[in-house]
Image (tube, rainbow, N blue to C red; front, side, top):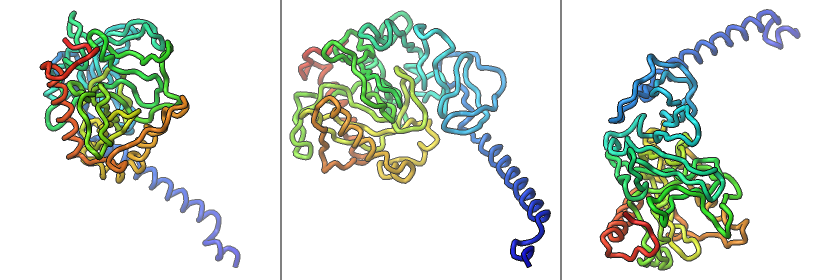
Length: 349
C-alpha cells in the first residue's frame, strides 16, 4: 500500500522525527558543556603585574573557541584563546599589551610592564605607536627579549590579520615606534587584507652586508628584523607581544633582497599543541602555506611591480631550518649592536 511504502502513518513519522530532534539537542548540550570545561579556558592573569580580577567566571562565546567559562582581568576582554589587553579606554590612552597581562609565559614577565601609547591620527604620517616602560621610552626592536621561554619566541605584531594598513617598526626612528610605511609622500596600504597576523621578532636583523648562498641566489639581507606570519585563529592587536612557536620559513626574494618569512603560531592558540612543524600546518589548516607564499608573491603587482621570487625551490623549510634562521638573524643583530656590522641609518640605543 501507499502507507507501507512511505514507512508508516504520518503521525508515527512525525513522532519519530521529534524524538530524534530531542536526542540531537541533548547530545549537543552535553558536548557544549564538556567543551566549556577545557582547562585552557581558565584565563586567569599570570603576569607579574598585579591586576584585580573580575569576580567569578563568565560563560560566554570566545572567538576561536566557542562557548566557554573564562575570566579576564578587570577592563580586559576575551579575544581568541586568551585575553586582549585593550582596556575599555579611549583609543589614544596608554594600554597594556595583549599576551602580557593574560596568559603570559613566565619568561615574558620582564615585558609585562610595557605599555603602548598612540600619538597622532591613524592613517596619517603623524601617527605612531610608542612603547613605554613607566615614564621611559623603549624600543620594541632592542628592548623586548627575543626568547619567551620553553622554546617560544616573542613576536611584536605590526599588522593584525584582515587589515590593510602597512604598519611597521620604524628601524630608523628614535626608539623604533610602529608607524605606517610611507612612499612618495603617501601612507601605504595593501591592495587587499592580509589573512594572517604579521610582525617581527625583536633582536633579529637581516644583514644587508651578508650574501646568501646559492639556494637564495646569493641575495643579501633586507636590513630589517625577521618577519613573522602568525597563522593562529585570534586577531593579535597592533603593538602586542605574543609568545609564538616557530613552524617553518619561506625564503622570499624581494627586489633582489632576501626577506625571510617565519611561519609561526600563537602559543595559546587552540591548535598550537597539535601543530609542531610545517607539515602539520597542512593537516590542520590545508592550503595555508601555499596561501602565504602566493599572497607575498603577488601583493606588489597592483603597483606595477614584478612578482616576488622564493629560494629553496619555493619550498617552505621546516622547523629545524626556521630555528637556524632565527639564530642566524639574532647573531647578525648582535654583530650590529657590537659594531662589527655597519648600521647605516638604523637607530640603535
